[in-house]
Length: 298
Image 1 (cartoon, helix red, strand yellow):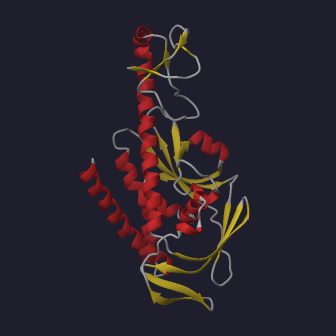
Image 2: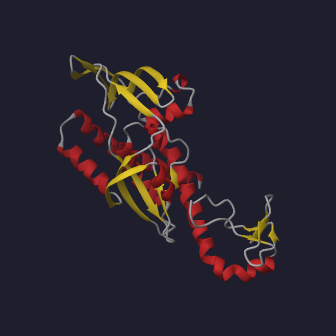
Image 3: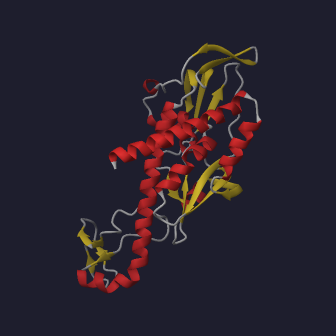
């Protein structure tokens, strides 16, 4: 139940003596901002004496570890999906300063067809497939992630909801979708269209809010990189709220935004919303491919 760990001296949770034994189940628990931390003991006897009090914390620690492993795995899947469904033909990317990146495109791929803006109209110009993301043009990983995730907030919730649900099926979590306005962006992207106009920076940003059985909550933000927030997609809600959240606009049940997203796409005849129908097909293939991989490798 316990393992040796090289670290600064800690105090035993029972007798307050110097301790260098840590509960094995709690070891390596991600920081939750508030609540669970690793529990140390000076001996196996003290650990046994403390087990009744420690047991619920230990369970919560395991739940958090599962949550963050699932978040990390889902984040890697999402970034792979973004690279495989890249649509833009990039003409130029310019780092204006540390907090601003301007990028220009000369067209966009829609379901295997290249479209180009001419005289203010979007017209088909050539047949093609979805483009490979030009990684060689962006040695900076942060720039790669920012471009790959820009304006794909709703796509992320739609594509990843079933996968997150499957990954977290072994723990009793509550998941809601929170639409919000952000604050303190570390970086902003300026998208210049082929006709010279600039795309508006989205005012609304949806994320998953996941609450564990012990009531602690965490934000799962797959597209944080577009605002210069790099690193794990999963962070404690308390930190997310303090550092990134300006105003909560709406909180809805898990899957609600996806239903709206598809309903809008099915009712619209515009090229933009037709892409949602393609995303629906890609989502099914993505999920089927993941299930096949799990059967072969797990």
